[in-house]
Image (cartoon, rainbow, N blue to C red):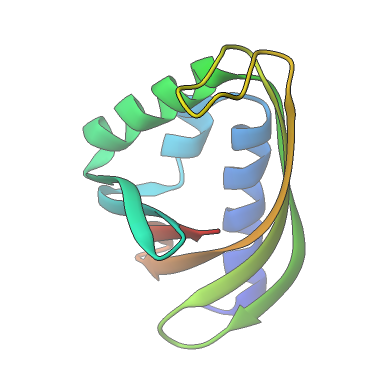
Length: 127
């Protein structure tokens, strides 16, 4: 796969994410999708397979009133496509860490995408 093909798939995934469209997100994922969310070098969420991923995506969807991931930069290698992302979110509900509904988040991070058969087979979100 060339970088343009990967960019199109990643963009479709992020557009679906930004629109809270879980089925749209799933449409570009392989059946055995592996997902990890890493914060401060610790995995705080993970899944394997579309069903588990859908469960995590539905839970995350309920936490936010608004959310947006924007691509800042893409670095491609044969193994991993690294996407630098800026993230904005507005909470829909209170979180255990003390953040309240209506609070806004602005973060920078990266996502590592791995592809197989023109689908995303692995996503590792790092912040």
